[in-house]
Length: 112
Image (tube, rainbow, N blue to C red):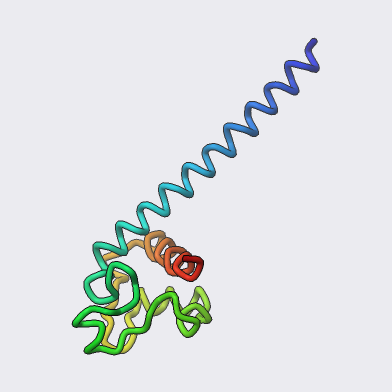
């Protein structure tokens, strides 16, 4: 009987841990989408294709394009944090975790 209780406790803890991981990942994705909308969409567009007046003027690349997607996470992080070409730096207005989440968001665009 004690062995069965131990097995059930372990199964419950494993299930709870999985739920927490999935929930945390979903919240991070929502946060990244909100950060993208607030900080990036004015130039990159809601669909991240760069098809905005500013995007067209600055020659912004589609974030789902192979050219952008082949950039490493370190390169994308640096572009967001330090700015690139005419893109401003966001290291003072975004936390490192938010920048990391944005990199994940950019990666998710290739899958759509």
